[in-house]
Image (cartoon, rainbow, N blue to C red; front, side):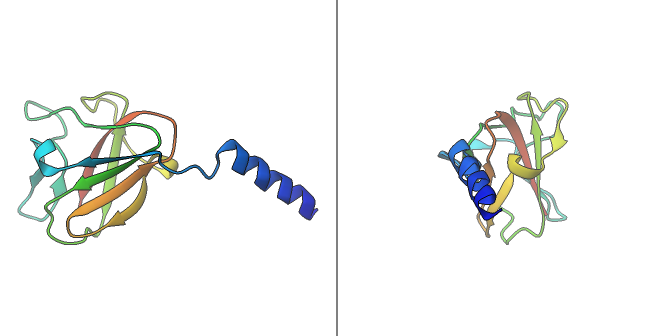
Length: 126
């Protein structure tokens, strides 16, 4: 039985089940013209929709996204919305391998797309 599990683990390893992000993409505040911090302490990487909306952050497969924020503290919650469209149409909250939260501090959050799919992202911090 243990030989069976060894073979399955080896197969997963060879198939890339343990693959990490291949590239790091750093997005600074200057790259986010519509980022905002509300009076209630909610930071967003860009406007949801409307005339203030800029294209969402390009978030390709196998990328570690290192995103600067101005929350001024470690976020207590990190929400990542994903869309296949740069304008955020038909967006949904991410889950699983699409947005692993790697780290968060007073200046940056790091989110990893561990899939091969390309998305556009909008990040909201509380």
